[in-house]
Image (cartoon, rainbow over all chains, first blue to last red; front, top):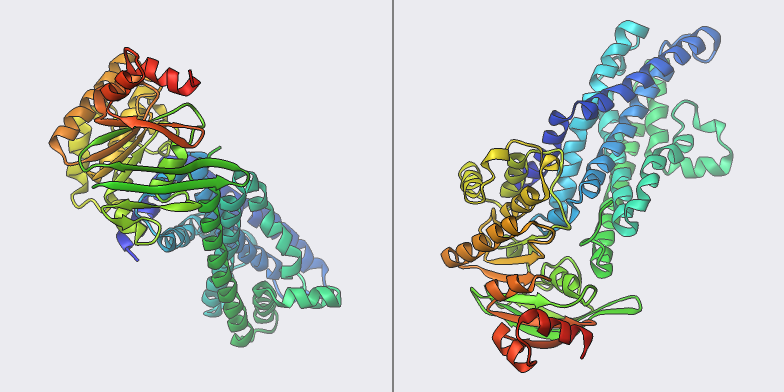
Length: 263
Length: 240
């Protein structure tokens, strides 16, 4: 891998964010709105639910972590969509950059886009609702890494769809995370789901990660086993995402869609 | 760089886009790729760039098959400009050139950008967003991007389409001058016959995916008994 080329591609998105206040505002706005919305819901549940009454902010912490996942995925998709919208797609694919370097550049740049929104939003939650995701402790790092890998994986799958089906696949980009959210058991234990859905849910990393998040906040104990399980499941999906991306790329070369993809 | 295209064939589902064509581009020469819309020019260019996988046939660039070998290594020495693809509109001209200079592994990015900005008269708007430029300015920026790596093989798809005569002439003059100074092989797809006569050493004519004629402009004009390339093109395109 050539890191200079990865940096060049990242630079394209850094320039874009730096030069566009609406884009920066968009990155900050949605996570902050989420914090306000779930902060008040969380506060209400904390005061009125026996399940949550000893644990301030379980829902809000889940909302922040879920938004982190969501932003990771959307950041990845958005950067790829920017190439399509700006009709720069062909320029990118005729430049001497490997597919692995494109994936690496998008993966590394997505974290900046994600953190631009998530860091201020997470900090706002501390004085406003008295909830700090940092109370999870060192396990938070592993939760975030696992969620990031899975978020990027969803981004990879959606971008593979964009290459395969063209810009019309864009709507799926926005819907993908909402589709998985019910199965992710972000706000409720997995036992709530019917048995057959639990089987599917357990094959996703989210269940293991969010179950453990709740365990840490409610019982004040940490078990790294579910986190590692979530992490490895995320890695498997990530490898699958890369495979699908390559498949879509080679398919697009056969169909000739790389040369005229645009709005 | 020299290019050898052998039995190049591309079929999209039920449509044959390119039907087993053969041609060579000699090193440091300019080959005109002519033909009516939909005749397979863009598909041919796409296959030379490795963006489209041929259904059959081979493309050798300096003896290396672009579909079987390290395409990335070859792409470092190739570039492409077309008015139908654009650079990110929200980025300034300088930012766009910097990104592509880095992607192509240009060693002295700053100097290369300044040099090409000077040559193509981009300095007045180099810090403007690309989306705010006129189409003539955009075309010059697109050409600058395609020359940023000093390519040994340059593919141009209608580089002066929709430009006023003054800017069109500026680009043609620049390309003539550039070719004299640098060792570059050019494949030029164009509908502007005077441009082709001025820039190309040889031309090939495509129709319905087939290569229907080839030679120098003079040879083709003479062969078809016409007075200029435009009339020759019309005769071949209309088949009468």
